[in-house]
Image 1 (cartoon, rainbow, N blue to C red):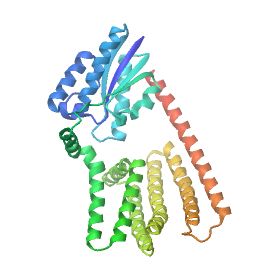
Image 2: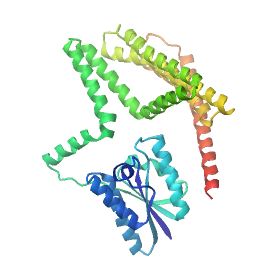
Image 3: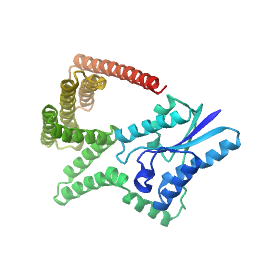
Image 4: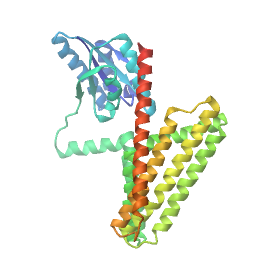
Amino acid sequence: MKTLILCVDRDDDLGEKAKVASPVMGRKDNLRAALALGVEDPEDSDTNVIFMGLKLYKRYTAMGREVELASICGHKNVGIESDANLVKQFYMVLEKFTPDTLVLVSDGAEDEVILPLISQRVQVEHIARVVIKQQQNLESTYYIIMSAFKSPKIGKKIIVPVALILMIWGILMIMGLVEEAIGMMVTFFALFLIIKALSVEDQLTSFFSDTREALRKGRYLLFLGVFVSLAIIIGGIVFSFIKAKEEVVLGEFTFRFLENVWLFLLSGVFIYTLTNSLETYIRTGSFTNSSGTILLTIIGSGLVIHSLFSMVGNFTEIKSHINWKWTIGYLSTGIIILLVSGMIHIYNRSKLTSTRSGLVR
């Protein structure tokens, strides 16, 4: 039985720090790569991932298996670009070594996003997650925290947003706006959680990348869509805050703000998606498969969110009366649209996967 031990480095520390080209195939080349990365950054966990791969290589060889070791890397811009590189390199490895089973080695859940794509091609028999052992004392804890502060990924995605929320809270407290400070903090924290849950950072990166590309190539329809979307979203946030200020209770303030702002956010995304689809159609003569599912998802989400806000407002007595017939109708329609959108997405993805499999074979 042929087994592939696959080490994953999603943010390409191997290439960025050690200048090692990937994919890295074979035991000797992976050992050299691990040593090179360890010399450049002894604290990088990806070094230990490769060493774990080497350990598993030795163990499987002792079991009498035919084993190959490979390391694949993504890109420093973690997201669409890095995952595309991982898939591309994975297919390159498969062309050289056709395994029956696969062992995935990573240093955390972030690197394991490629698992669904891998499991479609090769049976995954084991997942080895590397956890770096630390001495459990105050000095080590302090060191880990300070290292986290220095990490660009953690700093940009977590520390900076939390620091901005606390700074705004502190300024409002100094001005004597205690209730407003608490309301703003809860609102921003809720938005922060939504942004993390829906991976809005990746969408914004794509959003601004498309804007620069539109200006560079003269795609004015897409640029207009971006401009209008931003205007709607920013205007919606300001409008929603002004409307919510009329409420004196913190819970009602938060409810009113979210009740008003969601429509502007979805409208901005809808217009951007629509103009992007039209721009694609003008250039290529066809729409992308994802355009329809995204638009359906936005419409379905809008109906569901509208219904939920109506019901929550009625149950908490913020809203005095709602038409239950229309509310249940909107909710049911929204759920049906979301289910249809999900089925279309699954169908398109399976069709794309089968096409890729045919090309690789």
